[in-house]
Length: 462
Image 1 (tube, helix red, strand yellow):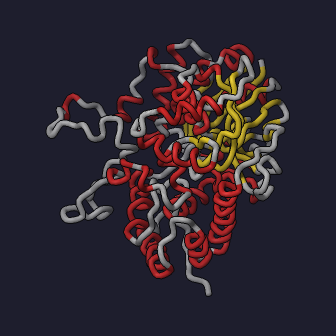
Image 2: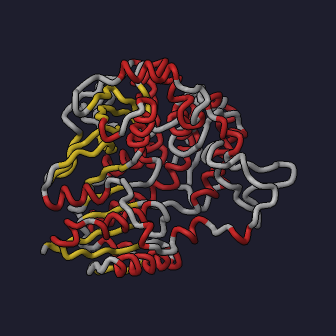
Image 3: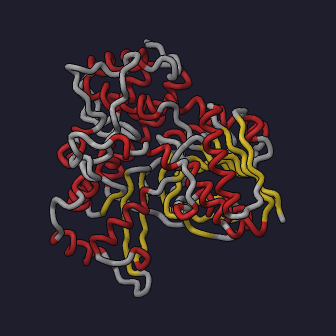
């Protein structure tokens, strides 16, 4: 039995922390071949306690002997760790609603505001400091550990850690798998029958090949035929832009409209749910003032967002977070995320392939800088993670779009290092969804004031 310590940083996360705990308890390899220690860490005691209580009930129900403990002390959680799973975000939807609304108020056409567009740049600057704190503490107390990151904006943050620290880091995302689900639906095939090759930027990837695993048949001709016949309005928010991009560029993108659309200037016409994001009435509501509500985040026009009762039975509705942390053994299943399979492969030196990893390019995608973090398929074994030995060739228009984002990455990192609003302005003006020069300057000043408690202090530098 080998000792293995896994640390979950940001353990109050409803999605990734609980998913990782489910995958850990269900791993027979880890149960039978390791003495497993799980350290749960969050900056808020009440958040980590909620996850700790859930974890104890979960592992008890499966009669799993893992040692589980909780802390708000980062150094204690990281000391001696073999793998560090990170999913951090402070007051996520409160700040995300600002990332979305403020740039649009100043003329940006951005959608979503998470990983691309002007909003994503403030998102990056907010999370970069805490991410660096984690990585630098790892350099002190667990320098050989892997940093498995789920925090967005994935590519920008992973690039900073990979350039500025010695820590081994990979960014993980299930976006490509979402794309496979869409491909399978068009083809009317089981997704297990479909093999793919693809890559790009996180939330802006493309399938360069799709084929039948059993026969080796190229499935793109069939996909082309099926896509033409498919209902134009089906799954509109997820697929309308993707289908238009496929017809424009020749390759089907992933993961969907509201993600891919963050990196281009013409996505708004293909996103019906755009008007629903953080919807509020400016006549009667003043957002973000003391005592005001954070408007609800609406992912898309589907999922009953537009089909609600005027007066729903509030008493019968249980908040999503409370429901998620209410343990039920019947609900425990594998998350489909990659962190635990990576841990198994590296720890036991068993080679696997994962569909999407964010790592420095190093020639994996032709035409992009070697030090830019890209997303592509990856081989994992006892030596760590290496980009799958293939060269993904993407059309010039796609490479050009991604290359712009690579330059934005560089400028954002310079803005952080130099505490410079001017470098941030340069990054924003380079973005396809930039407002005018005057609007961009005013937007930066307002956002820096609005988020001054969580953003690094930036100044205009001439």
